[in-house]
Length: 430
Image 1 (cartoon, helix red, strand yellow):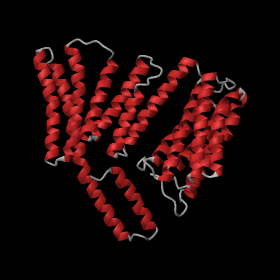
Image 2 (image 1 turned 45 degrees about the vertical axis):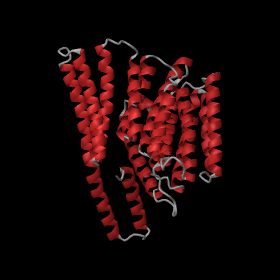
Image 3 (image 1 turned 60 degrees about the horizontal axis):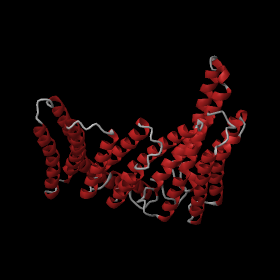
Image 4 (image 1 turned 180 degrees about the horizontal axis):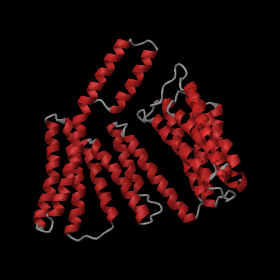
């Protein structure tokens, strides 16, 4: 079955080939029409089947809840295990009879019923334990199904469950460093690579990002870091992932074409966190030994990644200098006097956004261009709001703000159009 990501990439390539004259317009229209037919014919039954599986699992839970007290323990157990194994049995039959479009739905239903069984059996026998442990067992069960039967739906469920599990441990039980998440995540990522499921790497990235962000917040609470310090560390932590995407993209390595998406996630985190950290205008709150050591270690890792990317041809000297300079600024930011935070950070942030525009255009990473334009525009608006804040209750604030927004929108759109045409010979980011 052809995947959505493959269709998307092929459609983009067809447009590029047509623009270069390698493909006639008639051929382009015929190929795109066939792709649309394949997508409609191959995905819709599977999607409907998965929705049906979700409804079945929900219906089973509702039925059990409504009739729970009237059933004996043996009856409850028979129904619970029968429903789960019936789903897995149906999956085996569907696989043998080549009904693949419903296979994922039954595997998802079986994995879902496994979790329902855990919860209800604990209720039957009055097992009052640490409830995130049930989420962990459910995650393991979903991973086993995904690995044994190569089920993408079960693997997606596993990543959702492991994210909820680690969130429950850290936010409900104040576990500051939930290290058990890491090996479970590694197993899930290994299954993704074994299945060669590139779209699954989005789930893995988001899950790891959630764990990292909550971990940083827990550490900030433990060591009394300011909001600006925590955001700066988060921003700095995205740089090694951006470098990894650059290196692997240059070498067309084992990330299965996920490199541009990894760079996109990393840059989004970097721009967002470094923008928000300026809202903590305390300044001059020096880094403690733990935070300084962490940031220095991450900066060193980023420098190693930048050097590797430069050697692989993925970075030029100026690119490396800008990235490492911005990494240094994320550390030095905390030593700037309070009154100068905005006026020092703003030109650095806007300069970084301008560099990102040039970088996206030169290397044809077109997906980074809207991020750079948005970051630049957001910083302009933030400066305006901070400097004109005393006029907030006057009509002048809104009049000037309206003119600024219109001019900014016009300028950014004109700049986007000027930069959106990549250099010849470049590869578009996916």
